[in-house]
Length: 66
Image (cartoon, rainbow, N blue to C red; front, side):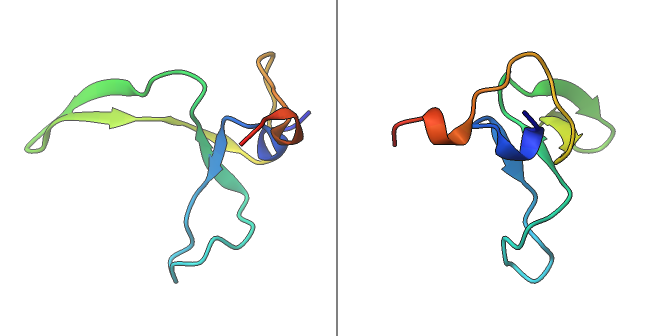
């Protein structure tokens, strides 16, 4: 039950444009937090997590119908 196996986790895109397995990504279980960034206005940011992290709201990707 790790973030990398959860339906809500989205791994970060690699710099070369490939989606090779990376160690970090974002949890999309809850809405992004919104912050004011100087010179850029309001920006939304998802929670950054490690592929090996975990939480109590895990749902296995294989249990989800597409």
